[in-house]
Image (cartoon, rainbow, N blue to C red; front, side, top):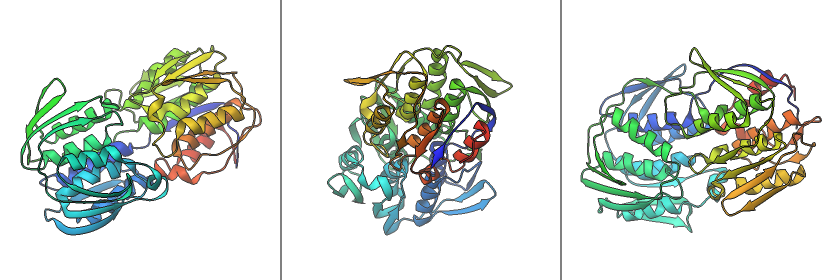
Length: 415
């Protein structure tokens, strides 16, 4: 499909964060009383989490975009759960499932079946649970009772499994002592902790070790899903390259890691301003070179490659070692695109240097069924006179089904 964007301009209501929505659903199901969640965004990942929790026996009632949650207090004996393509859903339910069922098998779809889940498996085993897996891949079969409450965990592969483990631990009897080394994506883990605290969780921390008693009573207050920095990242980069956008629904005082994009866009030369609670991003005149460390926010990588291409200087992006085990190998996929565009780049260790040319030629590109790649390659059409040919649009359903409608409206393009 040919994609050609023009000058990016207009207003946007930020879609709800699937990371926030899924955490809220889990907390609601761990709460002692019913609760409700407003602003629920029906992305594929959110719906997969909702369906999985329904299989665990929790009851949901939908009223427009509000979800009313009735938690189930009875454990099942054995369940087979399909989590779709939600990596966060898999890595959290692998642990929280122990609160809801004596044993459970987790299955997935699409790219999730091809990804390895060693950090999740090893952490489950450290708890004393039995895990049957397929050389690190799905399906995962989990059963048993927790035997170990003193854990030393590695967070170098990301924080999603740690969020799942803490959600389980808070709800499970025992005196817990959990140490975490080499934590990556720390803002997302801190976000989980803050949400747990808001629901009543109490703990003490010394250095990198957390101390608390389990089986704490949690109660999610009636709340709303926050706007998603990850979903609007492509739009913000588009405006910084060519145009101006005003985004409503983002919270500047939260812990979403992808909010780091604002500092990068400022370095690029874009104008950033908050106006009555709305975020204004205007085009950079000079398209300055930038350096970005994505250790805590790897989802920004694809769209920052496009930002680097829009500059005529050398831009550097580090933290690229965490890009392989996503919906695609994002480093390989974007390197493939850079080669197709004949953009010089060099990879040394954990850093890629990209020498942008300010413009891109037309190329036939593959998203590899990765929603972040598809959004980034669409934005690439803004700096291409003839646009770009992209093979797959359906992958956007995973996180942002309305992306292309918003892209068309803001860029004045048609497919």
